[in-house]
Length: 357
Image (cartoon, rainbow, N blue to C red):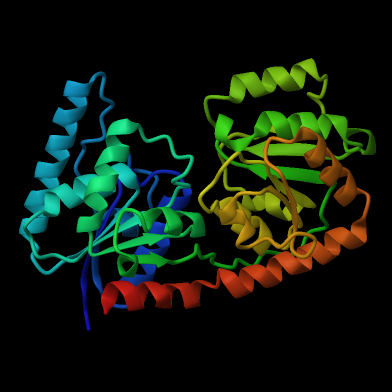
């Protein structure tokens, strides 16, 4: 049966959640459902034209300079959303990420629309501020269902709402086929250049390992506030000819060229970059965050090290660059696990059962 669906997120620009929303949009649209995306962000030029015509842009993504301005901006968002929801009494609403979820719950109060909220970040470490944290504790219980892609979040959410309201749906990956290329001696890392991602520790572990002396390069893809500091670390280590910052770009070119993928994050939800790398049959090294350990089994489909531990990360780098058989075995295990745990057809059916039934 044809359904009316509304997906809500503050911005549809770069990010793992945004990729997942676009995949869900394409899947449900191709299944014949009437679906729109609401965003506060005016910057939608980079979005595919076919998707862009189905985006309702509220133009309300503004930085707040103080508490009064923050309250005013969020009231504008609530009013604008409520107007749209009231005009569509049969639409099913799917909201993503904490502050947008709370605003959407506010906007839907007293209305009969089904409302699902999605938590995609690691709630234990998420820095959302005291006010949003309190609002989440109080308001999440009013959603029809709460969906998370992280098993640790499931345990936290049980304290905020009834257990039968909470669902775990893992991230999916659309497997892509590329012409085979001979991998080079490249260690790849992908992520926002932010303190959360552990790039200083990764750079230091790489510098201490045998990788530079054995002509392994470290390529980092991403942009963010830590770029200047990270480049300074590289300069001080005299590794400018070994470590390369490529900015924000489609990482698949580098997945094909690389031999190893490392994610050294302090904490994560479930990063798409990890799933992408594994789907490209790359052996991976990750820190011990729950979202990653769902897909990576130590010594079978990757190596897992404690977060913020330069010495164990260095040891893992040395272990994997010195053992081609290990790299091949972990690469095969990575692809096998992704096909089993992140199969998009299977996971889309889980979304169907929950949202469309």
